[in-house]
Length: 302
Image (tube, rainbow, N blue to C red):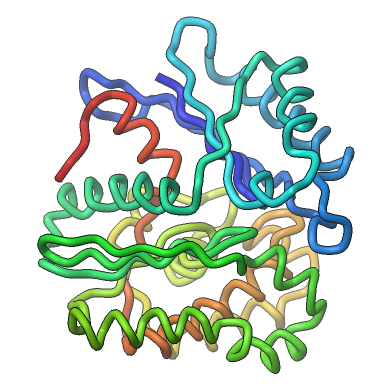
């Protein structure tokens, strides 16, 4: 089957073998769906063209015709006032029908994928918190032995970067912007107790993990990223390293047009370490796209 995740910044496509539970092929492209959304409330024409072009490119590399295709989209399209016409245009040009899913559904499917990967890695923990830092939203998912509590917050790397423009401005407002997350975590810890493990998925944590392993955007290897541990102090180190690179080198390291967003994401990521009360974190590459595939195949891992 084919699973597609159209996020606020990235389009991610996965061809998945339901029989073996293995990944056959994948495609990923930065499309900046949420570009200008903060200012104008719409997905602009250039963003729609980038999404359509990326889907068509994926269709040239992966055969969509003989497979079940499930395509989902998240915060940027949830928030845009022109979401219906955008999805209609995408369907007309590519034949792909997208379903807008809620933050809760996004969190559930992402958790499904991450639990599946943690089992594969034989990483056992009776309780953990999973963070998914997206382009337009951040999901916090607390998994206790018999209960999962999640919440989606409308703060992501694209929206915060475009709202506050510079890293200095972002640093000044981040505590206030993430105050609701802090309250949510504090109340949950008071009621349920602190979880044992901190797990992170999505572009920012995986990019920092890749830098730690000496990978760049072109040599990125998800199989090596999965299970990588990051310490809070390493975030400052890799942010400084990223910002000190010449522009061309930065583009090679983290991908074309991604460096400003990744820098903003690192600030969010570091603040999450602090408000969750952890010094180390396990990074997992799998996310919403993989969760969509696993569920569509009926391979839910409980």
